[in-house]
Length: 138
Image (cartoon, rainbow, N blue to C red):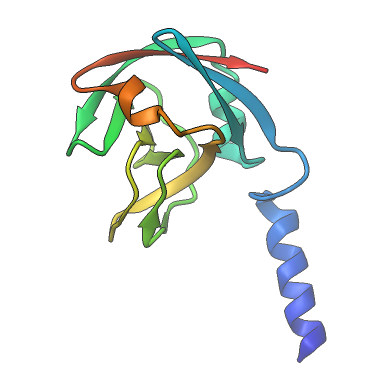
C-alpha cells in the first residue's frame, strides 16, 4: 500500500508539477511598490507568462480580491481550494485572473497560479477600486 501511494504521488507531480522545482519568480509592480511572487510550474501559469510583461487594470470584488478578465482563455485545472490565503494568485474560470488580499474560506473552484511572497502591505497597495498592476519576470 505504501508503494502505491508513492507511485500515485509521483505520477501526480510529474503530470503537471504544480509545486515543482521549476517555479517562476515574477515581480508585481503596484503603485510605487514591488511585490515578489512565485508562479507554479503548471500549464496555466506557463501560458500566462507568455503574455509578460503585461500591465492590466484590476477591479475590486468583495473587498478581498482584485480581478481582471482576459479576452483569451487559458488551460485550467480548477479545484475547490477551500481556503484562500492573502497573496494567492489564481484563475477563476478560464480567463479571470484573481489576486487575493485577504484570507477567507470559499466553496468556489480556482486554478492555482502562485502566490505573493511579501504581502504585508498588499491590502494598502491595492486599495479600494481599480488599480493598475504590472507583471514582469524576475
